[in-house]
Length: 202
Image (cartoon, rainbow, N blue to C red; front, side, top):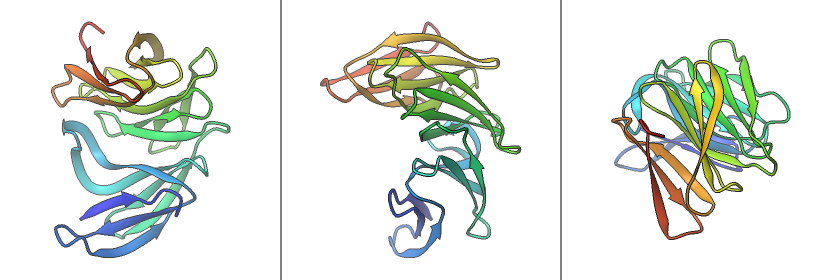
């Protein structure tokens, strides 16, 4: 099965593989992005799913939807502090926390899945637009591109705090930690380059 966030239709689609037949749509909210499976983020790009839940962020409603994969229904919504402007989420190595980027407000958050409680950091100076976010597979750092700053921000996970900004190419739009957790690959949207960050040296 493949799960797809439907953007402005506010639904998650469930499709068969390899048939690509659509089985159903799950109503979640307003403007959906970035489906993430529960489990841990260790392993390959998709982590190690446990087959229990799917998390999807709703940019329009400022929430994270929690879908029960076993029942195929939305189980609950996690409300983000307002304003936040959530755009992307990434699961940590323990499977207990989601990290979220607030593209519309310049904020980054650590969200405890079980309670819905979040800790929010401001990423100045304004204007600031954190977007694609990823956690290293060892659970040490969170990386998020900021396309207004043309940088990647580095945050420690515990305690959750801002460490530094690393200059990259123009207007980065994509930040991915490789499975070995040694490198971060950054897509520089408005320059014909890709930036590679050494996780150990930062």
